[in-house]
Length: 287
Image 1: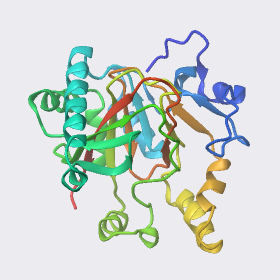
Image 2 (image 1 turned 180 degrees about the horizontal axis):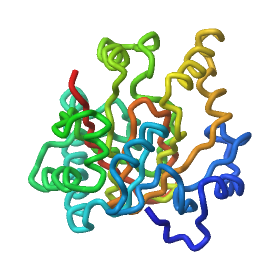
Image 3 (image 1 turned 120 degrees about the horizontal axis):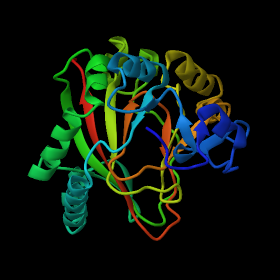
Image 4 (image 1 turned 30 degrees about the vertical axis):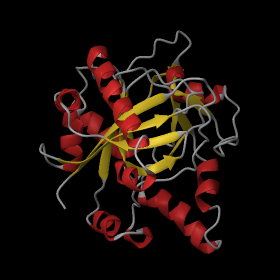
């Protein structure tokens, strides 16, 4: 995934510049950067010739993989229009009727995680991802080519949305599980993976996702959750992330992120006048 930024550089060099100087996510003590400032990193999927086994190995190590231009612009525009229609329809219903149409990430009036139906355009988009260069990585990661599609939704971030607290979807260790499903995944040493597909250009001020590469490991989760337990449940993750480099994922429409459900991440604040949106097909291996 080559950046079109003429000043882009290796991940380490971009980190050393720390251009944003933003302490919002607790990263002032360690550098952080924009994805567009990175031209070379182990979690960038470079192109069609990329070896799937090498890419899968990098995903195992870092919990994140970035790929550019996975879906054509015409299909992206169609999916975005359908997602916006689904959101408008859900918001027009009484709250008690629309609640089941939203996922857990829901910031009234500003940020929505709207569940999507498998309409023809969205089905075509899923098929495009199924035949993209990221598909073999999903198969190798989950150990099967017919991984189950367990969720399909779109995050819409409108102006005024606040930065979210950093979190992970599932813990890496069973002892930190909050549900039976999380415990089962951790016990089997597995997880879910999400393909976060940009449905428009998402600049940093539009609420771009922030990720902390390599924070999906049992060692990091022990550092994050263990320190919370030792300190009365407060501040452990924030302290651990403060010492870890982060990347703000400013994406172009059609770009995609493969994300391990154990990876720590946070959606940013939208301080612009436009809405950002990204679709999330979630996949899981055998139970």
